[in-house]
Image (cartoon, rainbow, N blue to C red; front, side):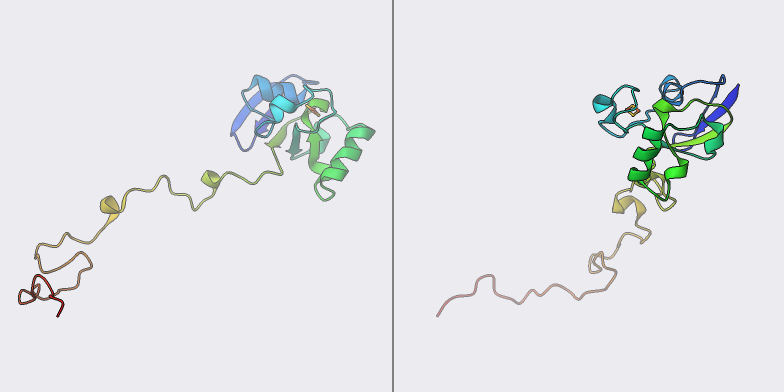
Length: 155
Ligand code: FES
């Protein structure tokens, strides 16, 4: 049994030697496809390239065929050694898998995301003004002008 860890989803599964990586994804509830890739995919025939994943240790998977290697080099020359079509890879060792490697991580996965924003009136640390002459901006304003005429006549 080998451990396959899906990094983005934080899911680990144990699979026997020779298990198809795409099938391991689907069986563990991890979607190897980008948004509509699953609908448009070749369903594991190795033609569409939508099931591409990045792996931590390429030696932990079966070696890629010529067509797959050519496709992956066209996709990303720098990463080609670590990319695999999950439908064409058999698991032969422990491996960490990143699904949708070309897609940036969701904004929710970034460190600066601190959860949903609260409305400003819940997070406002200023005390509510008790003096009616003090407006919300914290600046004291004078009495409202009372000697101004209600209407300005045109003459
Ligand atoms: S599902 Fe089409 S290439 Fe893998």
